[in-house]
Length: 172
Image (tube, rainbow, N blue to C red; front, side):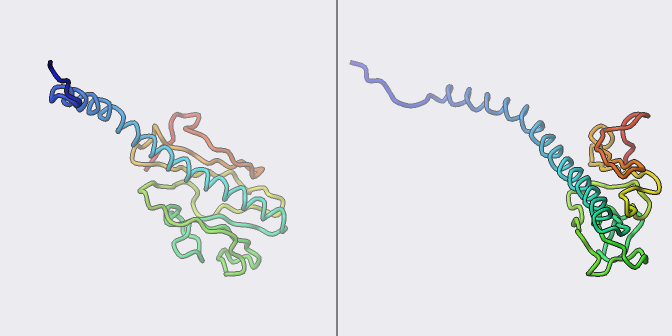
């Protein structure tokens, strides 16, 4: 009688490895794109939340509240939004945050994304409005197709969008 072997032949093993390789070569790039989208969405949602917080602080405390890019969490920097973002109540009107005025800080972006748009601070008045609208662009290394904007209208309401009326968001 012929006994049956319990195992895989070399041919069967090679076929399984080939199938796994084909599936992985298709799935890994998609997984990387999904991870980049997740990081970008997290950053956009965090900025959106900070803008809503700044508006809420302005209305609740009846004090001008600023949100701006900052490298040292004390002074606003005009083009350093990816170096960190801070929200503070500007009680003394000097445009700088003391420890007592600081509300929240978003740490520096470490994944290579860029945040551009508003020159200087975005200032919420005591009624939650802005003197003018504002917009921040968040971009990753894929540039325009994956970029997002957080827009503020003069009423102080914020919304997240992909692109604008002229097309996709322009990234640096």
